[in-house]
Image (cartoon, rainbow, N blue to C red):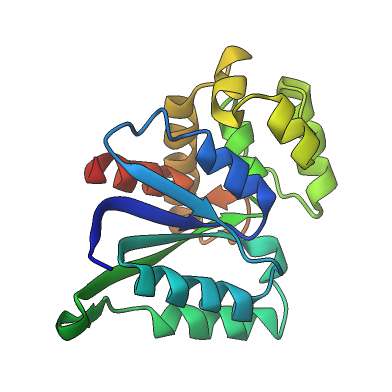
Length: 202
């Protein structure tokens, strides 16, 4: 298969990321976004999905990582090994393959980026439930496939209810600036950087 130059494979760790990035296809009109996720949320299956994407000819594979499951061993070491494995682009000219694999982290999980559609926070969340509770103060949200389908596209659902992708990107960037400035290892999202990468690929 030839190179898929104007296509990005986005690998989340579950259905949340799949449905969210599917809903962004209308935003990035000049880019083909293919969301996918492993059947099991472990590093081994994620690695297999990356390898599959490389073979399919994707030039860009973006992995969306929830850091709340990488706080402890052995997941932490396995994840670090995976990042190291793909630290450099895969370049196999004889097979016509060139691929950059990048990882974008959110602590605790992708729902923080959803909250950033509505407001900024640097609150430390010790469990996912308190983050979901804060998100529900801004917009009704359920972490179920049924809800994702009913919302008719998560991105447009958030914007219809007063959220903004531009705000989410700005808030995510702010969280990363704070993380860098004070060394905090919680409540941050690199998804703003991912959105800017996607814009650059259009």
